[in-house]
Length: 106
Image (cartoon, rainbow, N blue to C red; front, side, top):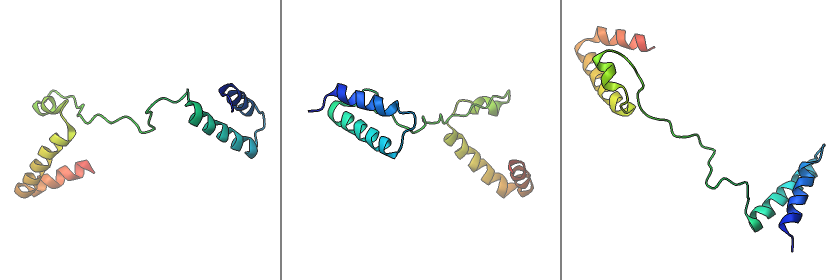
């Protein structure tokens, strides 16, 4: 039976090679796999994920206007739904204002 200490020594020897080749990499991968299956990986961070943390979906717009104060800290999706409705009304009632608004966004 292989011991954990023997595996750690073999891993250290592979990691310490100055000019590792493909054979060394294959051995190292095998040693890691055996160690993880038999003894668990002591370096493993539990349920660590490489996914980025969730992005906070709030508006950080700071302004002295009433609108700026109302939207600051609110969910972006909530505010954009209201803005989308407002822009649709402006498009129907004042097409020139709507076009000027769209040009500013571009």
